[in-house]
Image (cartoon, rainbow, N blue to C red; front, side, top):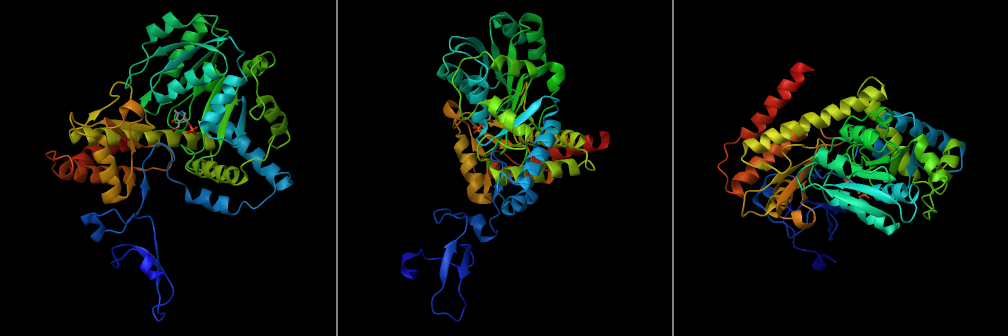
Length: 436
Ligand SMILES: Cc1ncc(COP(=O)(O)O)c(C=O)c1O
């Protein structure tokens, strides 16, 4: 057995040992460190993994405990009480009087449901896209036989509202867009798009992918007339992937009575019927529902038990962390990929010309066990992304920027004075704290 295992140099290879020092054999299990990872930092630091990806995001400990304890059947009074509580909390978290449904799938499942339930083959829809997730709307619309008109903003930018006005037509059954385009870390102005819809095509439904927008951006779902707003569990609500949730307006419910696209697992009317009884149409992701309840309790707890205020605090938290991160990275000499309309969910950072953003992502992981995201698709190598949505606080931001100072100096050869990124972030935090 011993011979099969890599040679380990205690204590720097971070094994856990099973057995006793008096036993002849000691078996090692390597925890979280690939034996290939070799860096000087390993010799002076334990490895503490920090997720800085814009989903999955770091898990809330209270939600993890709730998951572990969720040993219950879903057709019972206990689960029905939990499910109803979570659905009621979700309405407050989303900020709507509309129904909010919970589905056992990732966010894309709810995106698909908003296409299959709200359209018929041959329908004209408008897709407003500015990145990889916007492009997903086009793929989904085509998969269900719709004819999408596509307005594409260049990567790193949001839409020109005059261009939206020019392309939007009353015959569009639905507008599909994102609140936050996570692949470029751009924020879109949903309020302005909703107003344009009201002026130009008042009967057109507005469906917003808020998968990273929820918990990072303010929405007036009912006031603006958002017909479906979609969220995902592995984002601002601090729990693992596997749940999607979406609000559905009265006129979206009405549209579903006549739309013709096929749907079965994601038949939202079936889900609504069951939700009224505190159940889901099919076996729910019980443990994730319990985790979500605990996370929403935690968010409410940030504002003395008031979930609406807690949601606002969570959004403010993301916005301050995002502003501090942007200031710190700009102070280090980086260029923001989306300077004119940056998201609070994540920050996308362009690396200097001729450099590969993968170097930053790999170095953060190797030196600090910090997991950042590379660019997606053709943006790979050009930018890296760090998240602020969910269970991140200001001290996490300081840690990230401290690590980035080392990476900028040692891996990118930038002229770094230690403390310069952290100091810029501290200025942002201090200003925000003094004005709150
Ligand atoms: C804006 C946005 N839309 C859609 C998705 C897809 O969600 P999922 O991966 O949960 O299916 C993501 C995932 O990161 C996202 O950020």
